[in-house]
Image (cartoon, rainbow, N blue to C red):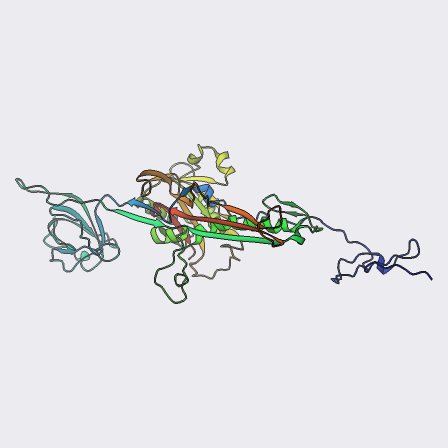
Length: 476
């Protein structure tokens, strides 16, 4: 008696050319051992790259630098303004010579005195109405000055009971009098940031590393082949590289002693990222509509800060289009025009880096789209932010060039890009970007675990120096 041999679920036919359900593979039924599909489907071996290049990193490498550090903290100091000026000062009555001196925070900092000296000449201005009066100082205390106006017997009524700006423009002494009794010691403002440790990991068991798939993988990192674990490992590496930049953009410090469910209560310290630094020490523009008067207001504010001539704009799509529409109405010459000074005045060099340049007033701007603000998986979202939502970031303005600061570690003045990354490194260990393999698969034998574990680690922080020259664009 003839017996038809069986092998798994494949049953050979006894007749040549006969088509039977057991002669073909099944790719669609989902049953693991069902190979009864009559005809093979046409298979595309390669994945379709429907999201294009999915990586988001590159922003910091375009505008800053990376430098090693050996400490748990990086400390730097920044100059204060040269001239003496106070906001939110008050006069109680038009015949009262006493001016209460207050800073922008509403009061002189504890332990410090106001710096206006005897015989100083001052300007007192109401910023709202523009009313002003010039006066001479004939008496001072820690928080007040006795000032006497030049133009009248009393103060103008518009200066009474409203926040005033007061600044010193000189001094006047009578004949035969002594010199200035007091001196002004310069003060510097100190800032610091601490690196945080960023980690990731990918693991695959030994059997899967030896398994061939029918889909050919290809990633942004250049990985290719029919081993699916290569794709997973490559994407983990790409994602980690993005996290290195996204962390320094988005992170913020934990507020000490907060308690409750705060990150501080869990032992996380955080670090000051780009957005947090600009919101805390820089300039925030809310609801920018892309009009020329609004842009000129930004220029006026830059005039009051460091007046850095060349600046870079990293914008989301809508804000970039708004500025394009604004520029379309400008002509070259006095109103503005094309400028590529930062790129040796080469349009090709600027365009190759994704920048377009224009000039307004005495400033050059280089504009580019920031993919991080457009990507649907990050800040781009679905662009359905409700009106009045000010949490969405529309872009940032970053000054080009370098700043001179005093480095507490080196003990000397140094020049650094306004925006740069510090990472932990020494002769023993470089933690800029570490990657290593553990397990017993992939040519490395560190344990008896039948698995390959790929580890990633970095320890870094961002230094935003001269944040008063940065601008953050937020939605209205």
